[in-house]
Length: 168
Image 1 (cartoon, rainbow, N blue to C red):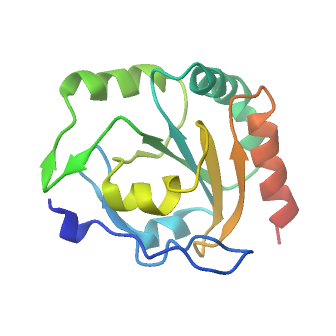
Image 2: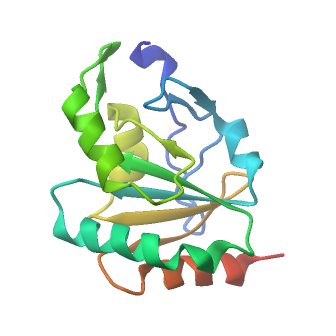
């Protein structure tokens, strides 16, 4: 693995779609190569940016655990981006303890993937966030449908509303 293989396209300037995931190529923490084609596995993909030490993130994770039934009628995949996991200069700079912490914190939640926070991914999704946790909701074409600043008991309902408001 090296950072030459991990990239996202630069953010678009269009106000209705700030980010494009076209050309996505990164690795999950299970060493699975993910390209933008994985977005078409479901109608919608929700990226959840968080850290294990963040109390608002813990509230969001708890709400996700309790309210996952809200998505049983929707074709949605969830992707966890724990901001404490790094892929640096072709090395996995994440410790086994950090991985264990991620799995422990997300137990009981149906995340399809956990993705490293690498510098390019950080520059694309996390560069403009002012708080964590943060949700990004994309359709299966990689178009951004909306974002949610997390840490509220209504997070998951707000994510569901973005999907329902964009359902074709």
